[in-house]
Each structure stands twice: as C-alpha cells, then as structure tokens.
Length: 185
Ligand SMILES: [Zn+2]
Ligand SMILES: [Zn+2]
Image (cartoon, rainbow, N blue to C red):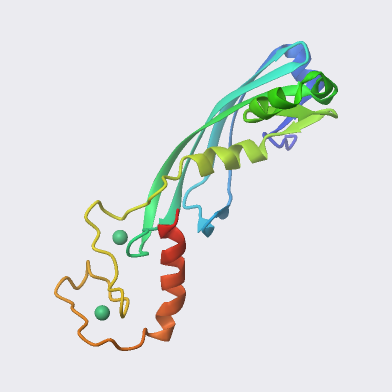
C-alpha cells in the first residue's frame, strides 16, 4: 500500500475532484505553546474536508487529542481534552496584489495565500490545538495554589503556613518563574 501523508493536499487533484474528505491520525509527542513545550498524551485525530471553487480552496475540519498543561496556580500537570477546528480559506498568491492594505490585514486571519502544487495542513492542525487551550488552565476551580514563600502545594497541605520570611528554596525559583509567566497570560 502506498504511504500517503494525509495532511498534504494535491491542489491539482482537489480542483479536479472539487471536494476531498480526509480522516487520519498523527503521533506527535509534544507541542510548542507560549509557555513552552507541552506533552501530547494521545494520537492527534483529524478529519477535514476541502472544497475547491475555481482557485479558492476552503478547509473545514476537526482535530481531537489530549494534551498535558500545567495548572496556572499549583503547576501540577492537567490533562486537557482538545476538540479543535480547522478553518481556512486558501487563495492563490497571485490574488494578493488585488487587496488594499487595510483589507489585507482583515483578510489575513483565516486567509492563506498558496503557490505551488501542494498544501501542507500540518500548521492548521497545530493551530487548532493551540486555539483550544484555555487562557487559564486550572487543575480544579478551587485550586489553592502554592505557598508564595516556599512553594509548598497548598492543595496537598492546606494547613501549611510559612511564618518565616526565609529565602525561597532555590529549587523552587524556576517553578515560581514559570508560575509568573502563566499568571501573566
Ligand atoms: Zn492547581
Ligand atoms: Zn510555605
């Protein structure tokens, strides 16, 4: 059986068929988010349709997977179910010159200009996952977070109180930096 990369679309064939339905799976191990790399816990399933209206190519689809993301308060890993959408309109690069500057900005969001004979939808799958990650990931709504002095997990040790103004445990500084990054989200 011929091995086909299901995220690559042959533009000529799509224009001939006018419609393409594809279902597949990729085994990615991690994804780069703005907080850093996050583990992907289950195969990334995708299902998409592409339509060709002359030179305009329209993509709609779904992406399903599970990723691991730290809780913004206590930094414990949280499993996130991802049910993302793939959406894009592809226009030939030659049409770019017809757009005025302001139009160009507005159009850019979901519009991608293509050239060549093949589209690679890999980035659309990655975007679909990234867009599904909530602004504030919490392990639970009432997560108590970490002690700001020593980093003790207050969910595991709710009675914990730090009385001393002692130095922050150096092992903890890195975690606190990450927490700060997450908090500024
Ligand atoms: Zn938490
Ligand atoms: Zn403490």
